[in-house]
Image (cartoon, rainbow, N blue to C red; front, side):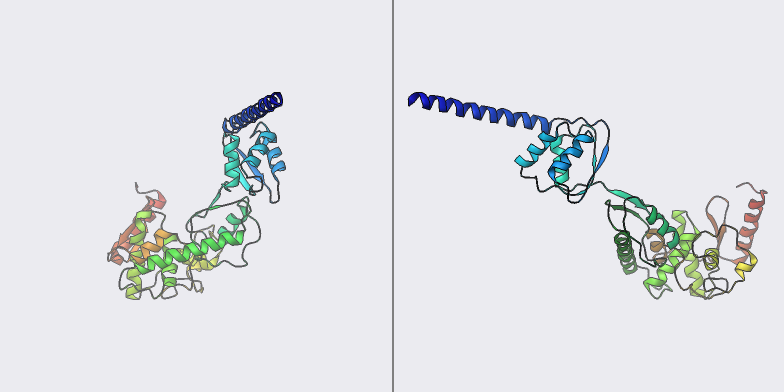
Length: 327
């Protein structure tokens, strides 16, 4: 009996030693750097089980042993907690970190950038071309309803959900900036501010100029002067995007609701999707008496209070266009 007890104890100790050794071996395997040599993206499809995930990870060179990965996942209680998604793994990532990332749903984030000043037609094309998005876009997206920005999204997110986030972002920015607007602006609503911001957005790409350009239009509205903005005329001719040619005399004489050489006040809607800075410029414009501006040949504009000064600036700009003036 005593001999049997000794044998049993020895076997028990041997079993414990084997288990401990196996545990140490497994921990060494899962915590050590993996074989991956360069950043790799793996997609785990919805409904994938532990076995298929482990095989994919070994096949793509992210882990050395699918068996070790499966054992580790089961021992940690994570076998049923693997989440579908697109995952980005860096060189040498350990199997333990691979598992932790998948369990935490730490998925790869893609990005789409919507530049300021695009029309809805242009934005729609960018969203259609964004890799990894799914589904159709809303049937109609009005200009001015989205906030130009860089948006992150997961593979598989719907295009309609992304557009919804862009609309919410626009609403939040417009609401916050409207609340902090300057007093006595000739703008009756946030929608009016958005319309004017879209004009400012198209008139200048120089950030520091936006408040001064906005001031010119605000001053003209206060005086009951027409805005006389070329971008509004172009939008009236073709609301889908860049006109692709200079404005013609017939365009300036055209009878469209967006021809601010003909129409008094603001046009009926935004002519693009303006960015945060243009909205802010309209709601807190520079304090100036300027009523005119024209390109100055440097990428910016020359501003003027009087028509006589403006005409001189225009004449100089035309000489620059002909190559008769040093910039």
